[in-house]
Image: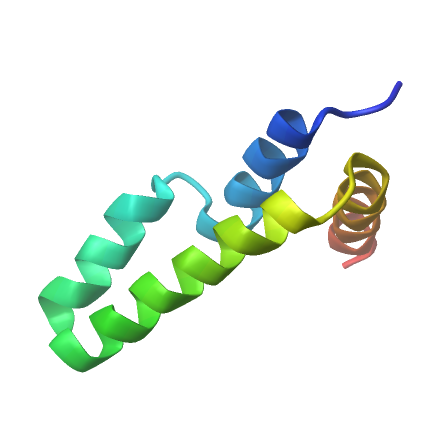
Length: 73
């Protein structure tokens, strides 16, 4: 079953940010260090941009590969 772009993004967010919402993650880091928080915000913007420019097929392949590698550990 093919994953939509939205489903792939949600799965990637769970893999990367676990239980924390991505924006909350960036804000948490900002609270610890303004310099690192700024970098976290940039990373989040890049994450969103990459999701937008990737095809559904490429995102699905990425998600499946990440899930496979996590289960092998």
